[in-house]
Length: 396
Image 1 (cartoon, rainbow, N blue to C red):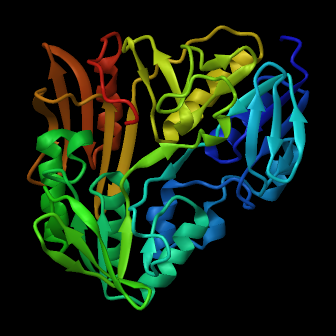
Image 2: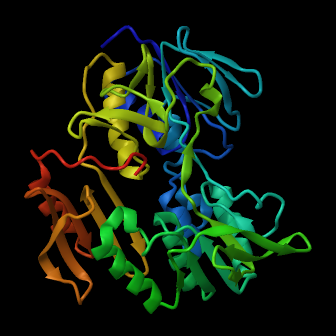
């Protein structure tokens, strides 16, 4: 173990907590502080667009750990106090309330924030979904609404559309892609997902650019498309992707480019690391810089960061992975699904919506997609090991 005696984790969500827990699990007994901008103790984000929004979970159930478990961690939680600056040379972090925190190692785990439409501020009934408070506010509005328009056809937008349809709302999903999750899934699986949504009554307005919103009396009334149509709405969810939370680092001297730029070990500077959605690191297997926004990455990357804080020299080169639950479909993706890949169904039946598909690029297996066959998809993932996937878009 190195001479690190205290660690400051800036960000108290999944990636930050996973880093703290990994440090303790690996034998670190020094000082440990988690600084968070939200007042809530660490909670999980994937349930927000599903169980919490649907009302099958109370918001408290999304907490990652109970109070007793957090107490056993032996860490100081400084919550509700955003970081406003970092000096990497001295590893000093200043907060909005005026705190000055110093540590031998600093971990940046500040995540991302939602993109918004220019005209949504101050208009009632318009929501983003990133935080627990966002989910609670959106559910309250949906329970009093009839018509929802979701702006954005990626993972979050499609999940919100599915959940809201389950609540009985009239739902329209609008976005620029030819099918939901087309960039993540490719035409084969995205087409099946479009059929799934349409079959459950979601109206799809795809290949459409959203120009803005309409309102009356301070509340949203619709969504304007580039073809002149206005989609009527009582509630609008804007799900247009996210931006790394790096504004507080603007004067730090760190390299900021679609996230905190790191080496293969997730180091941004001596004694400074980044983990989770905000980290853009050198993936040696891909031969490219990569930033991943998903729950699995937050946990796996945290383990490597903890090792490196404690003196190891590990590179982080995972097989990329993400999953999504929509209606009765559990979709898992391992590796990458590049455009033009050859797709073969290895197990199951597409018509029964229960199958595993293998994606090949240049004759080599590069990706696996499972649809309601999680065990089989994990097993087929082994085919990807030892192969270098094709480069994939950053921020995926």
